[in-house]
Every structure is written in C-alpha cells, then in structure tokens.
Image 1 (tube, one colour):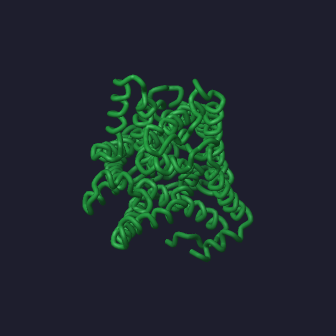
Image 2 (cartoon, rainbow, N blue to C red):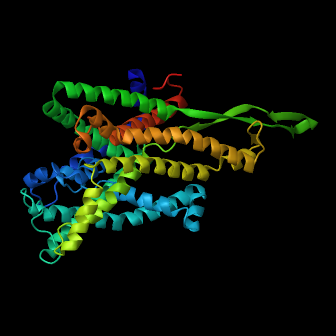
Length: 445
C-alpha cells in the first residue's frame, strides 16, 4: 500500500487531484473554527452537554456547529435538499424524466438542488440561532445575546446571512472536490470533520469510562469496520450471455462477433451511507421545527413543542427503534430509485445480452428486481444494525438510550460507515487511475 501511495504521488495529474482534495479539507477545517460574531463560547460549550439534537447536527456539519462557526450548518441543508428532490422524483413526472436524460438531466437536477439549498439553509440557520438565543432559559445563559428581528434586526440578518453563505461555501467546496479532486466531495467534507473529532472522542472515553471501556469501544469499532468492508464489497453476480452475430466484412468475408459470457454485479449495499443520512435527517427535522417553539409565550404551543422535541430525542428508546425502521425503509427506497434509473434490462436487450433462462425485456426486468429486493434485505438489516449500534452496545454494557445518545463509539456508527465508505470509494478511484497507467494499486486481486 505504501508503494501504491508513492506511485499515486509520482503522477502529476493524480498528485494535483490529491493536493486539491487535501487543500480544500484544510481550508474547510480552518474556516470551521471562525465563530459567528456575538457567540458566547462558554455558554455554547455548556449547552452542547445537554442537547443531543445539536450533537447530531454537529456530525453533519463536520464538527463546525460545536464552535458555531460560519460553517456551523455544513452541508446538511444541501443533503436535506437532495432528500426532497429524491422524494419528489417519483411524484413529479418532469423530475423523473430529467433523471433519465443522462448527464444533462442530472446537471439540471443538481441545479434545482442548489436553488433549494438556499431556503433550506435560511430555515435551518434561523432554527439553530433561535435555539441558541433562547438558551438563556438555562444556567448557561444565552449563546447569542443579540438575535431577534424585533430587537436586533441588523444583527439577526447578518448572522443568518453569514450562516447561509457558509453553507453555500461548504457546498461549493464539496462540488469542487468532486470535479477537481478525488472522491465524493460532500462525503469527504463530512469525513474530514469526523476524523478531526476522533482524538477528542478517544480522550473523553478514556476519562469518563476508563481503560476497560476504551478497549471495548476499540474492539467494537474494529469489528464493525471489518463487517462494513465485507458487506460493502459483497455482491451478487448475475450471469449474462451475449448472442453470436455474423457481420459482413470487406472481400465477401463473414466474421462472427459476440458470444462471450460476463456478469452484472448487484451490490448487497448499493445505497451506501445515504439511508443513514436520510433517516437521521428525517428524525432531526421534527425536533428542529419543534425547537423553534419550545420557548413560545403561548403555553399550549410550548407544551406541544416540548413533547415533540422529547419524543424525537435520541435519549429515548423509541428514537432508536424509529431510526432502525427508517434506515431499512430508506435503503429500499433509495436502492429502488437508483436501480430503476439504471434500466439494466433495457440496456442488456439493446446490446444483445440476456440472462440464461430468462426472456429479454420485461421478464428480465422483473427477475433483476426480485433479486435486487432479496439482497437489499441483507444490506438494509446491516445498515439498520450499524445505525443503532451505540444503543445496542449500551443496552449490553449499561447506560441505555440516554448514554448512547451522548456516545460516539470513538466514531459514531453513522460516521463510521461514512468514513469506511469514503475510504473505499477514494481507494477505488485511485486504483482506477493507477491501473490506467499500469501501476499496481491498493486492492490486490
């Protein structure tokens, strides 16, 4: 592997991509430490100890929310916009048609997603700022002393504009990595924040739980990584046969072409970490909306908001059960959307390929859908178990849901899947680049 890294840095274009990726990550991490004006850092640290919702949002922001920096929301509004567009595609025929138009259609969908990101970022910025401004109801005092359109309109507008601009900058960083660097930019932005928080998590586990708990968490983390790699690389290979064709050549010669056998790989977990992000975002949304009204002057509105906020809080067992169910549901949903967009049965028929024993066309499509649904069950259950791993661990070793909500297992289960997925995806991209130039890559066969 060391030799493969050395070979990657010997290639000028690949070295440029690696330096661009690392450079953008460094800039993003530096920017995530620039706080929004008017933030009380002491009050912010205190409120983070008692608010699990902010902890979940902090993961998707790459750790920037903990400093309430200009990057506090990270790429989370962009992810929310992607979820909305994905959910609307089966409902709106025009969006579904764009998804089938190849590169041009995907670019148009990305443009719509970028437009939708702006109002989503503004909404989330107002929600998070409202939570921190209303935190003077606790002993920590207000994190934002000057927030509210009635008393501080200019300060409020400047805070919201700063947070929205930070989100758009983070989104641009991610897209720049995707286009000019290595790997998926949005995932790498989140990856950088997760890895940056790991030393602090190790220290906290050592201090709070001692050496025994640290060893347990290290063991669970290593075993989880091994299982993730096995499942991520698992696939069902569907045999495909291409019929022989006779082609006329010059000089009245005939040549037989085709007739070879190959396979179509169907991945056990073709959805990657997307269902985890979708499910956590779906569960965070009601809590985020409810948090806007928890300090309302109207008693019944505040009561309902507090009930919803606690109902979707990670400190309760029901949250983890819902998380498990939603991960399975989103795995099936996302896999089905992506698989139908690929339209494998039609592509095979156009190329003269067929699955042995299955008629081309509609029968092949039904067969592939059945196989995909069966193997997706394994991937969905796997993702669901990874998602609730902190809860299961603390049910076994003590602490329950409340402890699991504040635990990171050194790296959170969702974060661990993101880290492993990003590393594998980046390695495969580097592998492809090296193989194109006849170098030995990372993955030995």
